[in-house]
Length: 440
Image 1 (cartoon, rainbow, N blue to C red):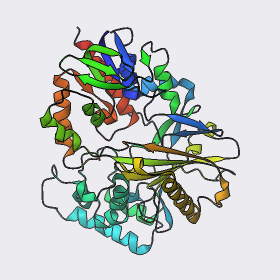
Image 2: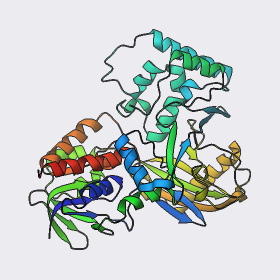
Image 3: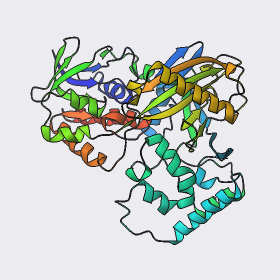
């Protein structure tokens, strides 16, 4: 069987690519799971809707904003962020670097003076080549690095701060002015700043509403269709079901590591580059609690090592339809090194869950463990693509080779990048446009 375009993976990138090609070119969209969405998915349990951790739409791209609004219509709600950091047994507002008010005086002094000193001193070395550790010292100073930036990011990425590059920071980490840092040390600032100061979320059906809307009416969406082998020379994809497809263009939003593993004529010189790509995993503990929790918080960051989780979110505060009346829902995120989740047995998972519940009670988020009326565990692997000093060269070489063979590796995992849902949608749109232009 022949297809002009074969698309592997029905996450947001693959779905939007298919949507843009629908009615224009002959294509087929193939997904190994039994539902579309990739990690942009929602599970239902005991009356609760649990996403695969927090999935929030920021929609800075006008074209993608228009697309999402046209898909979800009245189901799309705009919310204003209420996010916090918990450290030194105190809640402070996000972002930490401009909101140290409420912390111990010695910590505030260390953060503010460190920030001022960093602004006065010129740090040696090329800014283009500096890693995350030096970027933090240059922009925020040693105090902010010590009390939030280093601890939180080492928990999230699961590697020392000095092993991370600064490439991924971009729009995601706000850089305050000296006035904002000093004001935020003296006063409780309520002004929201940063990329995620506001966000959109579906009123009904959790984040699953978005991939479902994209998938609606797509004639060539094939579920439970896992690609098992690709021959780049013959342009043939084989599936575990026995199906074989010959293509002109191949679009893949599956993990770049997974993709390279199923290419049978993969060059040996690139094999080491693919094997060197690093990632972390996330154990996502979803909780339904009763009675409901009296808070308007959306999520909380935990930079200190004594807490096993790096973030806790209140999914019940994204939509009242995510939980039954009189309850609340939470998601707890624990980052793990690659390969950890596959080796965890039930007893070890239970230990992590119980430790997390005990810490939530210690903090005061839970009053009693008997409040937990629903428990859902999700294992996410890969979760975040690691930006170490080998990543960019390896990814560029791999994707350049694939492109030369008519393969577009796109999306968060296909491009092996740190990005948002709207970026995934844009990958799908722009790739479809490239493919359509090749036939003009």
